[in-house]
Length: 358
Image 1 (spheres, helix red, strand yellow):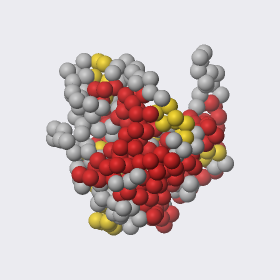
Image 2 (spheres, helix red, strand yellow; image 1 turned 180 degrees about the vertical axis):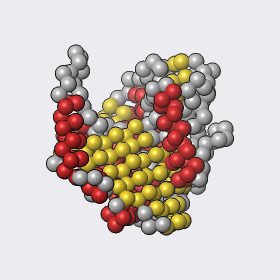
Image 3 (cartoon, rainbow, N blue to C red; image 1 turned 120 degrees about the vertical axis):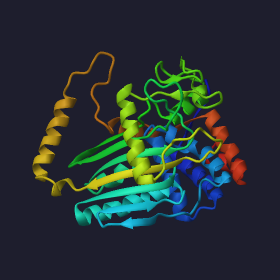
Image 4 (cartoon, rainbow, N blue to C red; image 1 turned 90 degrees about the vertical axis):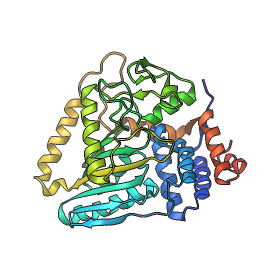
C-alpha cells in the first residue's frame, strides 16, 4: 500500500500553480487549470485531479496539448453554436464554452453548444456547476479521443473511452442536483489511482488483455492492456454509444474507430444543452415538485450498513468539507509522477515540493 500524504489545500494550490507555469501558460490559464484540478480532488474525484498533470505534460511535449489556446466559433445560430477548442487546456476551453452557452441561454431561453477538439475537459460536473450557479439546467454528452479503454457489452477488448454523461439542476434555496459519471463502471483515472495505491479493483470492473475478468488495475494502466467494462452491462454501453455519437460524431466531428496508438493526448467532444427551466414551465410548480420528490426519496429508511440515501452531488459536498478541513490525500506514487513531470517541463522539482510542504 502506497504512503498517503495529506496536503493542505492552499499549499497544494501554490504548488500546482508553480507546476502549471511550466507549460508557458498565461496567468488566467494558470488559475483556471489549477483551480479546476484542485476542485476535482476536493470533491473526491482524484482520478480527474492533480494526478492528471503528468499525462498533460506528456501530451504537451508530444504537441497534443496547446497552451494559451481559446475557443473558435465555427457556426453561430444564436441559440445553437459550434466551437473548436484548438486542443487547448480543457479547463480553459470548457470554461469559455460554458460562458458563451450560458449567455445565449439567458438571451434565448436555451442554447445547444457543440464543442470539439478540446484537450481533456476534466470533471464534467464543473461545467454543470457553472450553469446551475446561474439557475440554469445543463445536460452534457461527452466522448473521448484517446487510447480506447472501455469494452462494449459482450466485447473482449477496448473500443471507446469512458464517455461521461452529466446533468446539473438548480434547486432554489438548496444545493443543486449534480449527476456526473463515466459510462464505464469506473473512470480510467480511478484505475490509475488504485494502481498507484497498490489496491485491487472490485470484481466486474475490468477484463485483462485476453478478455478474462480481473481485479488487477495494472491492465488499465500498463501493457498488456485490457479494458474497463461499462456500468449496468448493456445499459451503460447504450449510453456510452449515445455519448460517442452526440459528443463525438455530432459535436466534435471525431469518433473512436481506429486501434490505439502511442499518443498521450486526450481530446474531448461535448454536446451541451443549457436552458432556463422558468421559461419552460411554471417555476413555482417545478421547484415545489422537485423539492417534494427529493425530500420523499431521502426519507427512505437507510439499509443496514449504509449511510442512507444521498442524492447526486451530496457525496461530493461532504468530501469537499472533509478535505478542506484535513487536507487533500495524495499517494506517494502519484506525487513522484508529478515531481518527475516538473523535470520534463524544466521546473524545479525541489521548489515544487517545498511549496506543498513536502
